[in-house]
Length: 67
Length: 252
Image 1 (tube, chains in turn blue, yellow):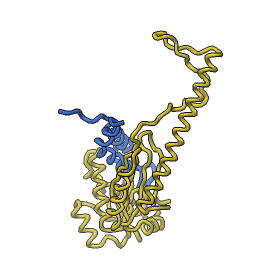
Image 2 (cartoon, chains in turn orange, purple):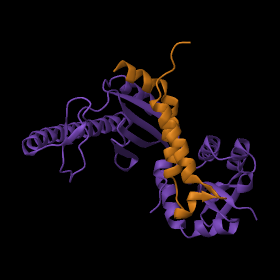
Image 3 (cartoon, chains in turn blue, orange):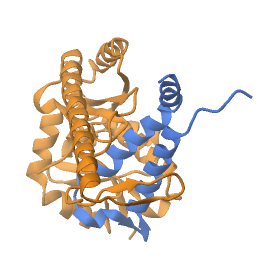
Image 4 (cartoon, chains in turn brown, orange):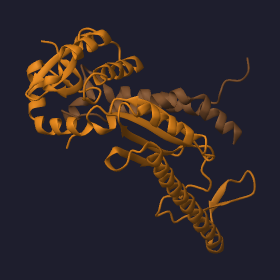
């Protein structure tokens, strides 16, 4: 239990990023439907997944040990 | 003509001097596109940097700058138009809905409150329905095989017990998440359409809530939620914001 608690607490900034990414990518005003997923050839779904997966990975990463 | 990356929508008369100055200070180069009773702040896409966290945070920063000085609807990141004319057409086609959403949201801001389970879920995830075979363990090193009738019955009973335990555990967590949502509403004062909750959106998260609160109340709301956090033993309550009203900017 303690290990789990420490792990979650240590990574809160990444959880915040995850929450923010979810809002930026999935909420807000939608004006053009599916056309929003790609900008100038850059697939924003890929961008979104990349950001979110990185955040999730960090959320689950154990805290660094003592130096 | 450069394509435009749309940032935020405000009332058409909102592009006053104060607003323009505040947005300019946040970052020059934003373009104002008026369309009837609404308008949009946008960036030229040509100026866009490499995609990644930086772009995401830049969008957030620009939307925050606009929302700090006017009632504002954040635009979903990645929404773009090929020109100012197309931007105007997109806005005018939804003018009534956008005006209504701006009036509904006003100058309010979003506070995010999420509860993370301190302990992992107990019980076993129920196997998918329609599973009819039950692997029976053999002595070490011999792997598993499908059981004969008696073993299948025994394994089947075990399977049903585990499945029931898993379902009960999931229902208990959902009930707890509902209770947490009610506690968060009481602490924040945001209820009804001003509070949006997702119960158990993932294994680690009990609750993800978005609360629409007055800009002047936001600090006090965050304080009350942090007080609540200190009273919760089974979850860690993470409070973020105030942010622009991302979760409340949708139009039908």
